[in-house]
Image (cartoon, rainbow, N blue to C red; front, side, top):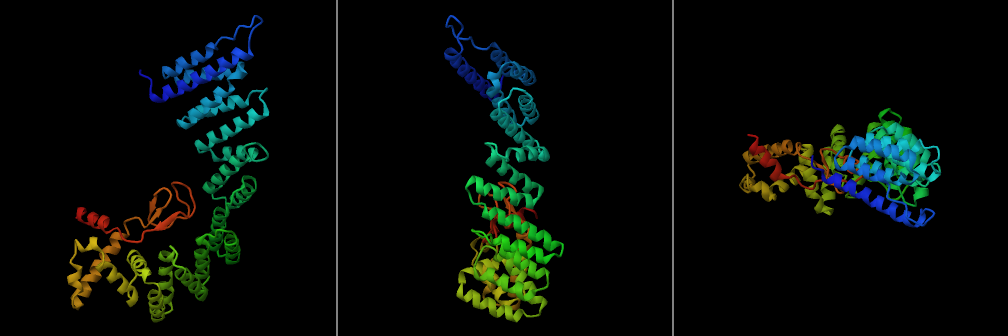
Length: 401
């Protein structure tokens, strides 16, 4: 069997380590006559197993070596790390457990082995075991910062937001970095959980803490508005949602449907019409975003919003290649209005099948706003599309016929 590229890389590493060990031996380990200590033959045996892709035999061989030769411990750390990176976490775990079992292990080496084993457990999805080791390492070892970073990640996966807040705050002190945005999202998670149980007082407390840091998370403003909405405080909810519109943030796509819903429930869409016209007159660049939001959320029946959508469609060059919209707009007859409404309805259905949000860090796309990107795990990096991807949805429509 021909050795793979990864095998050559692994073998190369061990050759390098062996060479270093041999060179050190020339100066530090001479016999009585001053002759250098010869190269450890066990290295060559292990390399022979690796080159022949006999990974299990190589593993057993190096495990035996670590019991008898303290100078090979760094080699075993390197081997365990390579096994983990290759996805062979079970072998990495065996290597690092074997190191920890040594009774004569120095404290620094024990911490290194514990840290490596914790990463093995994390890679294997054994979060409870990884957590225990990282908690231990976070209590004064040289791996404190890395352990706290790992704990934040574990608590995020487990949705244990209180522990995440504690670890994040400790990490701020030890690591000298601001985690205000990240910790604010932890408080928002707790706020949303409390609101779901009807504990709005506790929810508001967490939102207040979320908005106390700098930079503030935009999520805090939206969560606060949602809490007011869910507690039937429509006046406060409208005030908060409108503030999001006034600030012209990317959350307009989330706030506008809520505003329309509240005005409709209170039979006050005429007031909404006046407010929106005033807002768009002052900020005409928001017309396309209002139109986009209306299309993807199928909002209609409010003249100013309908007008934004119509202008949006008429000025869309890609859509014009498929539909003679300019001809439909002439005369504004009843049939033309019906045709535009039909096109708008079709676009709403098509837009609902395409991603609405995309992460600015890694490009991950989703249908709904995700505060933490599932791909890169960064917080508040998703942004809404500013336009319907007409070329994509129309092509999909044609090919699916």
